[in-house]
Length: 324
Image 1 (cartoon, rainbow, N blue to C red):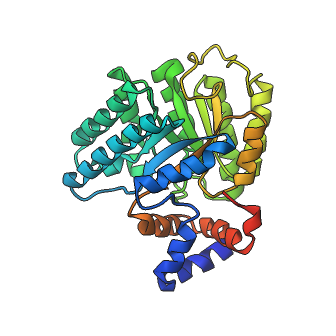
Image 2 (cartoon, rainbow, N blue to C red):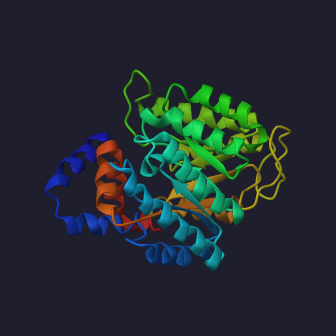
């Protein structure tokens, strides 16, 4: 799979833009908010809820952050107007984190406050290792300001993940809310696991740790070994569909959340698995990215993790196995 992915990735620079656009149509909801809203209306009948992400990250000037502040304000207004079961995902570098941390904090606080007024959850996406600690610090800072409708993402492949989970659970108590994933960014073997099996094992350990710490656990994976482990781990802890969260360390019920956990998947990936989880009663969430930067997003994803290309190739060769 790794070799196939790399071969596909090598062909990307000479692949016509319209071909990449055709492929991206499956994984990107459109170039504007209207496209994202249409996709959510179409998928709403499948029992899914949503996370909306405006594509773009690592701006070069603070003026660029104004676009994201204004666009996310529009997204929040649309969620309320359409009464969608949806939250939002922000990339901190799109708000200026690598340029001016104070300005980025103010930008993110503004959006988080607007979301809180409508009981909408905000997820700070996790980017590469340069911003791991600043992103976690942003979450704890928002909680200190009384904005508890915010959580972050933890990438299981990083060696520091165990301590990050423990520190967040300690700092935020029952309000800790973590999206746990393998991690899309390819990091050095000095700071991260690099083999598939060890990354899966690290992800499973992180899920166990989050569940035992009382954190709300958003399981973001398309890997069956992770999904199967998660189902077993939930059962062992007396957790599952329509069962009140039994963990003493967990906070109370939260609007738009499952009973202490949920499953999350990317738009266009493993829709059959997501629908099966939903039919079994599990809360499932679909990541809905949109924006004019779809091309950069698609290419960057492939460069950061060539194995993503295999999933794209498989969906083209055997589309019946992987409809939205």
